[in-house]
Image (tube, rainbow over all chains, first blue to last red; front, side, top):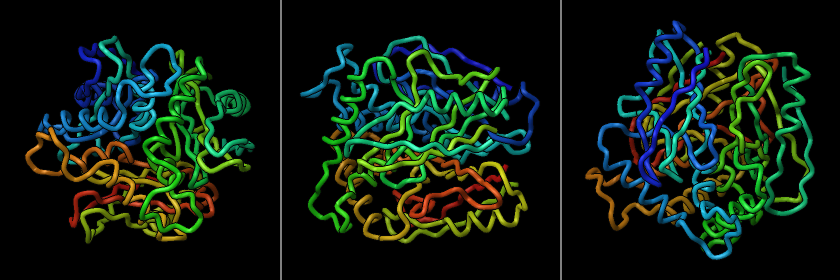
Length: 131
Length: 131
Length: 131
């Protein structure tokens, strides 16, 4: 079962916990065992799995990504001025696959699923396939 | 259905749009709904999804990867002289999973699937599984 | 079929070849064709696929990751002191998908599957789903 959710982002760089909406899609699918594919159809966004307990982890992650891949860099040609966001997208990755077992996502105790925004604020979509 | 395609690369660092060959494999499979796994069986290559409209995005991505992970680094031990390519491979990732719906890849408007070459030119293979 | 394996790590940063245990899970599943999802349920670990022949490649990869993402960075807020490990986890990625064909993992000649430890030594789990 495929469902697409919408997420509004509020900053240029942001990570939004979408674990609950993903769980809701899983629940409504009625599927108990399989895999869940979470896919970001945007080239300046990404999906990742990381800690959902201490928000400082997210702060530190965005800080590091910005230090490694600053907004502007000598030699960039892309005229939209968001080449950094495209690079972050490919390094973090467009999708995540989560194992579904007995109706539950097989995530670790501290893991949440995040939509990463690297060129916001924007309206974003996330595709969730339960199969 | 599994198919392997061959790609010849022409530079040391290059990103080659393989969206059309992937679509062709999907079409010939006859499968309409599911997932498509695109896998690079090389340790100095990768698969990513990013913008397929403005080629400057690809230029800027390869520029950034080279700035972050230069060809040579103090302390490298691997005697083949391509440790940078192995690192890029693990950071960008060996495979991508794309959702297939109604016979179409559920990619965003600007998304294309790329084989990344980080130690070319070489002859490369890409495995495509429609399931 | 789902199986969880345990791995004890011995250093803060380490990459452990888990290809053989993954193959063992595949064998015991009896499944011949499909995909194998290898998932790390920890936010300071990761799964990657890279060279399994020359251990110097792994040395050089961990060296590069440490150069890019040092243990400490001005501005880090997370009080556990392992923000670097969380960033490495999201960049390398939480899981890998491998194609299974005729009972064999469709890996390239030099590819092995690795559990990456970025905040060890610890006891780690890896979930392996054959589907």
